[in-house]
View (cartoon, rainbow, N blue to C red):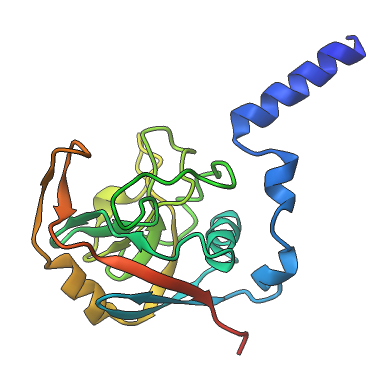
Length: 205
């Protein structure tokens, strides 16, 4: 195999995986508290504050990815654009005017099946139909959602933490009026925007 062919194959694999060398190096790893196995993130919304404890041992890639968006401010002033009563509150991927935001660090491996289930008040990664297509969108489970866990013929959705304070805020979010948004082309969009104003990685305890 010639050197040129090897280079082409390596480049193709990087593109297919969704990661590039630049993606992996553009956030200082020290900012992500690499030795903190249960980092806590504060999410300040226009409906109240939520504290989320992340589980790095069970979902290392997912936690690392989520924290990159947190420490760079990429989640600030984003909308929870999909809210379904007694199901999920989803956000992270649109701005306050419901414009889509690109994933900044590529897609990540689906870590569903790590022992964490889509139970009430957990946080998990949203994705498209491809199992490894998650990038920046996440959701809160408002009840136990067994249908989102891995099954014999389903990858499921990766849970990577849980709410430790502010579950009542998520409950209030889940109750807001929603509608079909013709501009976006999908239902369950809050009539009045629910905004994640600021996400902060708290200092290690």
